[in-house]
Image 1 (cartoon, rainbow, N blue to C red):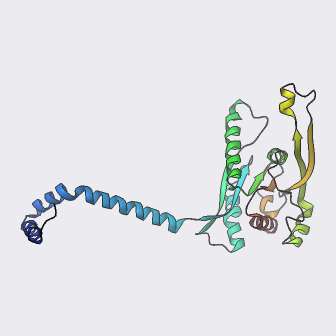
Image 2: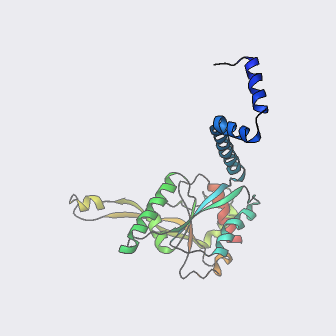
Length: 245
């Protein structure tokens, strides 16, 4: 029921005449939940504002597949690239997928890890949130044969033909599967297992680049661009960065 102005004045006067203890008890009895709710709303709003103000937008998404990258090299591959671009490290980042593991010969202990990594990688590619992969030869073969990698042809470097010429000695060729009747063969619908492949220039051998030479990798390391990346220009800049640093 709506109170009259006289009733409101009387209640204010009664509250003002209460002792401090009575006032606190009155507030706790009648306004506690309103205060708690208000504080909760302020906390949620404050948290949302803080996240928005400190949010860092990915410039590129980079995955480490079948390789371990030390803290120093990781910093050079992330913050170093932002400096190369002249980007603001407080507002932008190189988003990393660490410790991905792919193998067709995973043993019992690693099988679940390999499966989980494959699902994570497929999800990231499907969401167009994976642009580049730094990988060993086994991962390179698997990703190439599965058709995940973009062909690093002159057309890919159309905006920077000089970069293509500089990287040409380090560009590598691998197989891409065009057709595979393994399912039909397993079902007995085909007499022989036939796989048709074609070569594609889809990797960059980076092991000897100064950025990687001191990292102590036990085997060759390759950098590839994911075929459906919506950021090809940024990927091309990243290839320039790793070759110039």
